[in-house]
Image (cartoon, rainbow, N blue to C red):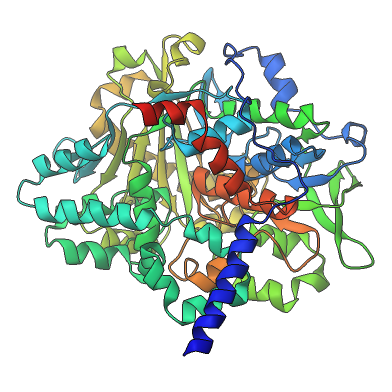
Amino acid sequence: MWLYWLLLVLLLLVVLRRLLGGSSSPNPFSADCRRPPAHLVTDKDVRKKVIKQAFSAAKVPENLDAVVIGSGIGGLAAAVLLSKAGKRVLVLEQHGKAGGCCHTFSKKGFEFDVGIHYIGQMGERSLMRFLVDQLTEGQLQWSKMPSVFDAVVLGEPGNGKMYRLYSGKKEYVEGLKKQFPDEAVAIEKFVRLAQRVAQGRMHMAILKMVPVPLVKFLSRTGLLAWFSPFLKMTSRSLTDVVSELTTNEELRAVFSYIFPTYGVLPASASFSLHAVLVDHYMEGAWYPRGGPSEIAFHTIPVIKQAGGAVLTKAPVQSILLNADGKACGVSVQKGQDLVNVFAPIVISDAGIFNTYERLLPAEIRTLPDIQAQLRMVDHGMSGLSVFIGLNGSKEELGLEGTNYFIYPHQNLDEAMNCFLTASREDAAETIPVLFVTSPSSKDPTWQERYPGKSSLCIVAFAQYEWFEEWKEEMVQKRGAEYESLKNAMVESILKTVLKLYPHLEDKIECISAGSPLTNQHYIASPKGELYGAVCSISRLQAEATAALRPQTCVPNLYLTGQDVFLCGFMGALQGAVLCASAVLQRNLYIDMLRLWRNSPANNSKKKD
C-alpha cells in the first residue's frame, strides 16, 4: 500500500510541475492592455480593410512564426495570444469575411448574425470578460440583455405555457419557484447540483495539460471521480438526472430547455456539459455591442500590430510536411494555382474532421493516433437558420431582447427523435424546437445603424442527409427541388413564429434561409454542423478528454477551437488558450489568473 501512495505522490508532483512550470516565452497578458474604447466604426471601407483582406502571395508576411487555418474565435484568439507573446502569425480564412461563426452578413439593407446570439459571464469583473478584454485590448463592448434572458414556450405560442428564466442566482431560483410553486425542493437541488458540477469545468483543461498515462491511472483508480463532481457526472445523462429530481414533465422540460445551445439530445447529453451551460447564463446574458462582427474587427488589429495578417478567400488545400514528417506550412488555393505558405508552427481551427480527414496527407491520415482520435468523436448536429428583416423599430414592433425556445411538446427527447427519424418530406411538420431571437433588440447601436428596421433570427435542427444530394451544386444554384425542401421548413417555422408575434406578418420585408449546406459552404463545417464534433457523453470521459488536446501526433501541428475543449464561443476560447499554452510551452491559465486576481476591477470587488 505504501508503494501505491508513494507512486501517487510522485505523479502529483509531475502534475504540479507541468501545471505551474515556467517558460522562456513572454507572457501575452498585460495589466495595461485596455485602451479607452473607440467609437463604433460604421464606415464600410474601413471595416473592409480589416475583415475582408483577400489573400495573395504578396500579402503574406515574411518570417512567419505560425500559420492558423480558420478565423473563427478559436483561430483568432490563438493568433492574438501568440502575437501578444511576440510571434508573427498569419490567419487564413476560406470565406470572404473573417470571423467564422462570429461574422455577419447583409441583405436588402439588413444585417444578420449567424452564430453569436448571446454570451454569459461577460460582467465587468468576470474572468472571461478579462480574457476577452485582453484579446481585444478592451475595445469590444458588451450590452447586458434583459433580466428575462430566456423564455421557454411549451405548446403552441399563444395557447401554450411560457416560463421565464431570470438573471442572477437568487432571481433565477425564485423565478422558477413562483412558476412551479410545488417544486421548490427540486428546483433548489437542480441549481445547487448544476453549480457544484460546473465549478469543475476547468478540470477538463487540467486533463489536457498533464500526461495521458497519468490521466488513465487517475481515472481507472476512481480518483478523478472522487476529486471532481464535474468528472463524476460526465457519465450521467441530463434526462436521467432531471428525472430523479422531479416527476413534473413541464419542469423537466424547463430544466433541459437549453440543450440546443450545445446540440445534444437530453437523453444523450452529459449532465456535466448541461450544468456548464446553466451556470454560464445564471448571472444573465450579454450581446456584443455593434454585433458579432465586432469580435473579429477588434482582434485582427492586435495580430497585425505584431507583424501578422488575417487574409480571407484563402482556402487551405493541405498541410505541408517536411522530410522529417513535421508540419511546416500550408498550401492555399489561389485561382487555378496553389501557393505554399511556410511557417514552423501550423495551427488548425478547421475542426478535427477537416484537419485529419482532408488537410493531412493521405499516408498520415491512417496513423494509429489519428484514427484513435477520430474514433472518439462524431459529427455534431446540423441546423437550418431563418433570417427575417422587418420594417419598424423594436419599440414600434414590440420586440424585446429575450430569446425564446419554443417546444410544441413537453417530452423533448421523444419530439427530437420523432423529427430526426422522419423523412425529409415529413420533417417540416415535426419540427421539435425553435430558437427565436431578435439581434436588433439586443444591440443598442442597431437603430443608429439601421433606423426604422428590425431583425429576427430563428434556428432549428435539420439533418444533413436531407440535403446531402445537392452538396456538389453551386451555392444559390441548387435547383427547384432543394429550394422546395428548404422553403417547406421555412414556411413551417414562419407559421410558428407568427403565432409568437402575430402582429409582424405585414411587417416582413425580407426572408433568407440557410440549410446545413449553407454552413458547409460558408464556415466549412463538413456536414453542416452547428458546433463541430458532438459533445457526447463518450467525448467528455476523462481519457477521451485528455486525448483530444491541442498537440497532435504530427510534430508542430496543433489544434484549436471548440473541438479541443467544448462547443460554442466560450468553449472555442478555452481551446485557444490551451493551444497557445502548448505552443508557447507556458501555462497561460496561471498567467491569466494571477493578473486577473490583481486587476483593479477585481480588487475593487474585494473592497466592496
